[in-house]
Image (spheres, rainbow, N blue to C red):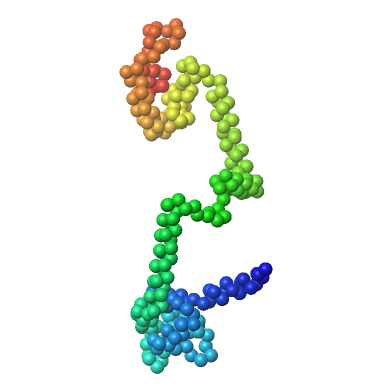
Length: 254
């Protein structure tokens, strides 16, 4: 049995085996940590004695330290911007970059071969991926827990929606198919008054005469009712009524 602290030490050690130094979108060095010192020293930036190599690399390629140290290497006499250019140019023509490109190519070939195997019918393992039903169950459980804990998130809105639904149900529960019931539900889906029911003169001007909905509904119902005929109310003459008469007399539209 492998101990947890041993795994942590191994993971940290593996991470520290490779350095990936990047600055301002340019790769300065990507390779083994042991070879980083030789790479910097070869290009004229050796790590001083008794200095942490990571700090030396950081000060060499980080422009934030340029005000602190005007020159990275007093012997050479160049600033950080020039040092970055030297290191980037050297890395582009180094064995480390070619090794990285080969490794990327190998990974790409492995990915392509894996996809080809999957297309040919080779069944790949899905690992720990859960099924659709299991995902729905977990997400529903989490949502129910959140709704149960947060009153404003669920219960308040649920009560408001229930009240609105109950109110609409009580309004339309006893409607019939006669003319009066049709007038109640005629406007799509708006709560508007007939012009004759609007209080005059205070409310009629802003609500009816300059209302956008007035002209919208007039255009809608005129397009639907013109050239149509309907049976008239029982006992009324004539026996049929035109759509234009309904729009003008029943809906009080101009």
